[in-house]
Each structure stands twice: as C-alpha cells, then as structure tokens.
Length: 538
View (cartoon, rainbow, N blue to C red):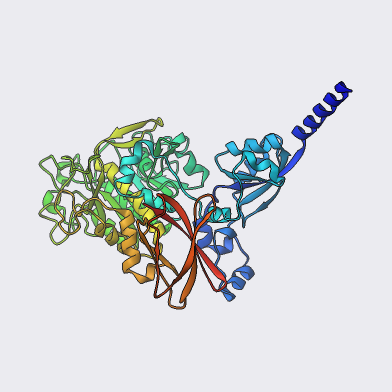
C-alpha cells in the first residue's frame, strides 16, 4: 500500500510538472511606435481612422501591433506554443509547462508573466489591474556605466526616464568612416530596432558605407548617440534613427570635401532627416592656396558653412563640432560651426570645465555667439570599431553627445520647430545670461529645456500639462480650457494607489512632499476620459 501511495504521488508530481499551462507574456515595448502613430494608415484601415476621428478617440500606443520579432523568438523557445496575441495589452498568449513558461522570464523583452492558473504566479511578478499603466507608460531604466557623467551632465537621463530616447527622430551623421557598425555588438540594438538606415559614401560613390575602413572616426561619433552595451554604455539617443554619410576623405584635405558635405545635406533633406551631426571642420588644405583664415569664419565665406545655413533654412537642426583649435594660433571656431544658424558645440571635461583644445569664439563672429554651448569632450567615452569602450578627446564627441540629447528632447516637444528647439537648448544652458567665447551659453540642461518649452509655449503643451517634473513638493496641473475639474490618482510602480483626490482649474496643486523618491504613475480622469502620466519624485 505504501509503495502504491508513493507511486501515485510520484505520478501526480510528474503530471503536474509536465502539464500544459496557459499564460500571458507581457512584453516590454513595441517597435516603431512613433513612426506608426505618425502614419496611422500603416497600422489601421482608413475606416478605423475615420471612426476614431469622428468620436475623438485618440490613436495611441495600444493601436501599434505587437513586435513580430518577439513573437517569432517566443516560437523558438523550448516547449512553447504561441496561441494568440493582443496589441491592446502588448501581450502574447502562450502554452507550455510551468517550467518552460517561467524560463521565458529571462528574455530581455519579457516584462512579466501572468499564468491563467493564478496559484502559479507566486514565482513571477504578481499582476495587478494597475499594471496596464506600466504597459502603456513603460519605464526606461538604463545603467549608463561609463557614459553616466556625459549623459547626466546635460540631464538627458531624466528625459530617458520619461521614455524620450530619440524615438521618431532621424539623424544624418556626416563623417569619415563607419567600419563594423553593421556587425558590432554596440549597435545590435540599433539594428534590431530597424533604426540603422542606409547610407552613402560620397567620396568613393559607394552604397556600401561600411566598406570604407580608412577611418573609424564615424563609428566612434555614432556610438555617443546610438551605442548601447548593457550596463556599460548608453548613447544619448539610443532609439533615434540614423543615416550614415561619408563626406570626409582622410587621405587628403581638399575643398571637394565641402561639396561632398553639402551634397550629403541635400540628400538628407530629401530623405526627411530631422537633424544632422557633423564632427568635421574645414580651415586649411593640402594646397595652401585653398586655405581659409580666421577672418573668414563668419558663416558667409566657406561653401560648407553656406550649405549648412541652407540646411537649417530647409528645416534641419544642424549640430556641429566647434573644432579643436583652441590652443593653436588659429584658435577660433571653424566651418561649418561658424554659421550663425547651426548649433556649434565646444568641449568641457568631466568636471564641466573648459578644455584648452576647444575652439573659441572669434572676432569674425560678430553679432552672434560661438560656440553656442558645450558638452563633455575631454576624455569622453566612445566605442571603437572593435567594440571596445575607450576614451577620446575632442569636440568631435561633445557634438554627438549633445546632438543625441537634443533628439531625445525634440521627441518630448515634437511640435516645436528646429529653431525653437535650439533656442530652448541655449536658454537652458548654465551661463545663458553671461555667455563667453569659451563655453558660449554653457552646459545645457535638457530637462530644463523641455520645461522652458512647455511653460512658455502654449502650442507645445499636451491637453493637460503636469509640472514640474521631476517634482519635489508640489505638483501643478494645468487644465485645457474645456475641462474644469478632474479626479487625480497616484500609483506606485507595483500598482498600489497611494493618493486620490480632486483638482480643478482653480485649485490645481497636489502636495507630493510625503512621497518617497522614485517614479510614480499619475492618472487624471474627467468625464469619460482618463490620461496617464509618469512623474519623477526627487
């Protein structure tokens, strides 16, 4: 009898261990959200779009399909059968043994697992109704590793926390070479997200932009915007999209490179690029007859500077390295950074102090400030063509660090023009009221730039404007004209409601001084509508 009982218990254990279970696998993110929302016909029929418009129903992230690459990968996992999917909840319904389903938790794109058999959920994060806010407002948490100083210096990390990571912004990078960008690990995230767009080598007239291995400068420049190595390195716009253009011939120095640059800028304009980063400068050439002088650095003389000004006129935000001539007899910002229309970026060290090589404003730049602003270029961290994290000096790197940061800022204020964005960046800088020829307006604070934009330009505000964010003591809620009163609820990251109350256009302040430091979800409900916001408590 005892043996029979043991056998029955063993059989029951075996059946339990191998029994097929159903579960919902909640995913961390979706692909191409910004581009899909900008082009809703790519994800909805015209009839659906018309119906939503008729009833003022917002097309949002829930309408974007589940990432098909995640589904394809789930289908390859041991013992897993994909049964269904839901874009509204960004989840995939799977079937498999308890052990095989729990093994999915190790996948980087899996946020949580909710077994249909709720008794099995003790081993995974318990699912709450409030988790829907996590799915719609997914928190971005990066371990910046080596790049922490250069990211935090311009306060772009706070934009990243709010999911502003450059998504939907397209950047053209004009440089000298991009070897291994198409294969190396630091750009795997970029490739997987479909954000590494095509490019062109204007020097060799070659569509294979990776074939030119004469210089890896472009690879290192790109890394400060788009590079990502888990827990070691995060660029300032890891989710922006990038075109790569080679315009610099490292074998010689000739004005034809200015023409290559302008041709590439024209190509960028035709492709609808939002921003250009160029860590190049033109002053002197192999043939001294072609040389410019510091007096020519007024934005009106060099072909490349005039081309850069036209690019800005066409609607592109152009970010340019100020140059590395600060300690030389040349000294002044070179072209195309001398154009009054571009944002030229000088360099500081990790402590935010001017580094001697950074080019300075010169006497030819009358009536406008150069450099415009600065970012870290002294011993900045970059990734080389061998996927190694190293340190390099130069405004070549302060420019992309800031360019990527501005891409993340622009995602947060998408209705701002390129010139407005540049102005907000300048206004946010550390010495805006007392600029000089070394740091220009100083080190930008991109979170502050966002707040300046939203507080001073009503056109850029969402329906409700929740500020300041990050917040210390009092959170204010600015109402649209048609709304008088709303219910407000605040939830912590595990879905617990920790505050509820009523706010109105007359009494619009919520005291959050008692909240602990961290990220919270705020829900505003009015009539039959609700809005969700992520707030950061300092």
